[in-house]
Length: 456
Image 1 (tube, rainbow, N blue to C red):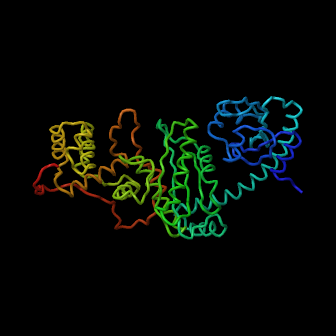
Image 2 (image 1 turned 30 degrees about the horizontal axis):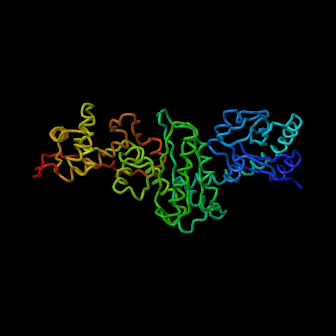
Image 3 (image 1 turned 120 degrees about the horizontal axis):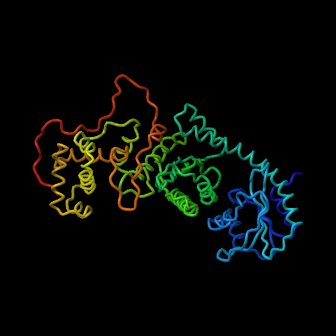
């Protein structure tokens, strides 16, 4: 009878008279032996949490355990209540699959015992590699099906049916898509935090039953599909908060210089409609990164009128959605302070007092700027339709990168919609001779009669 990894670890611990732990290369628990002698808090925490804490991971990384190809002695850390231990790399054809750990408080573990561990680690590696391959096939099957589901492939319905039939997801009351997007604070392109996201998911999803969630992890983001009866469900909210907090902790521990944005799509009663919820989650993420006043957790269902703004910006191509007069302002670099003033004024529903306070302007200076906007943009800020058109156009211009207000001191500029992401998420449409590019507003092409009144 072939031994399991659990039996192999227990037999090795009995042979040495020392408690042993087997973890994968990400320091996630695979198997452990029982113990009848004192151990440290780190071992007990790893068993309870099923993986090493960020603090312990940093300590071990500092001693090169992830690059080690030979046994490594790791000194204790009193601040972590961590005793000295010996790390035996588990290697398959020089590929690191995991680690065997032995607490060695008095450093009495000699060369003969270490040689025994190295030999046993080779046997463990063969078994672990075999199980990894089997797990990879299963994971690859789910990943491939989920990738098809989240595109407009004609095979999407078959992929959804396969995931349900195989028990990978059980969503009789519907589903909600969630995206965790990592944003580089240095703005040097995407950051590679795939291991951080995997750790976060291992921590936050470990208590869920099979069929309650699916996930895909990429270099700088991950997608989760939760079985849920509503996008306002208490259980869903708790799960989103748990994975968000876990990802934050892992990012902070990694020193990646990145922040986290979470987008939650709308609820769909049918699992094979997951693509629609996924696109909404993606647009919620883009709203959080590009629009002012947004939290780093955005629910699509709660975006209100900003849903219109984000949908217009996600149409692909550079949309012709900018107010004709606003276009002239955007084409004039010197007019940026006027545009920022206009946006703030519209954001607070035309309240001049609040606008002046936010911009730290005297009311006279504010009125002068607003009058200049009216003159240069050929608009009338007392006309409700003009204000609506300008406001929507400004938000779309933000998302598409046509307008970038100056960030507050010490902050990075907001990130515009990614062109690649727009193309990826945009549903395919059959071109028709009558299909026209959308024009939201054109501004006042005629000198219409201005409405009476004054700025609030």
